[in-house]
Image (cartoon, rainbow, N blue to C red):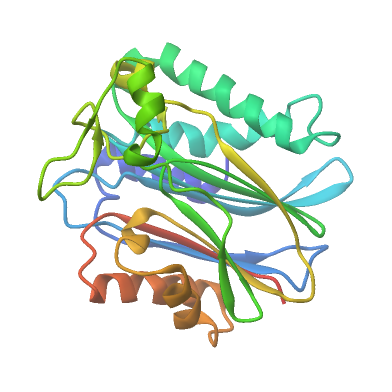
Length: 282
């Protein structure tokens, strides 16, 4: 565990990490033309910060992998915190990771969710959405459950790489499991009148009606690929994919771009916790 992560955990336990933004940047050693930056900002809610990120390059066997993720917790930060520490390790330990990365990711999502449910007494009744991206050379593999989103910019055009798992879109599946989707005027659709996403890690009390099956997409990074945005719904509630891309396309520094996106979301009156990662590919 890196020193920054240890300090963050100490702050969480002391209740000191709820107000100040967390921010950082870096670049790969082998992939020197690729840089990344992240920024997090506590929302206006009374609860503690529930967003966590992974934004790093890691040497795995003989290859350097870019590992990027947004974990947006709900009903507590414990599940998102657990995912930050354990999900990529689970993915990379799958025996078929190199041969079939997509299958390895799907299996790791399911096994990690199973462990979280088994640890519900320690981790609490809450849950977390997730969007993960693994960059291996020219191959980008994106997976997600929930409504945190990944977007790529190619020649100035935004393209969404993840799927927003909204309850109305999966109403039939939820109802086939014995659940229901509420549509109360003035509120967003919710599973069993509670959760505003149809897929998530954790949420033991709702799990019979929820899925942890990720949508997975494999994207080739080419000369048209400019940058990637990963962000929690605190940005996407107030900005379209193209608006987000347009707002940072002229900002060269990845960390500054991530911060600018959050500042723009705040200017548009986003009240949620907001986390953002920008990966510059050129």
